[in-house]
Length: 131
Picture (spheres, rainbow, N blue to C red):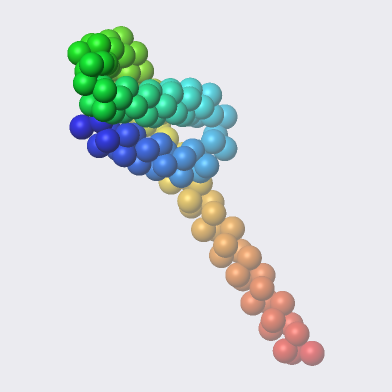
């Protein structure tokens, strides 16, 4: 289960980085996105730490009970609060700060810029062919 948690948290971190690149241009979203990213990275590091503790507990059976208790303490007092707050920030980004609307506006502006560049390029080609 810990391996799956590490993989899923990495996947979430990776997909978040893609969105972060696009949405960081908004002054309204930037601070919350950076907080969300910081907590997500912290959670990922903690999941790796938990995996290492769990692995050590399975390798050294004399440590098994102690590592199991330590793993549960870290889950309940560190990992779960961090992931809850990270999810809260993600919800804030999507629903309160309306990131999907901003994302659509950025994509629309990008497409318009591409069309303008394409039209400018075509006009220059036409001028060169007419001379």
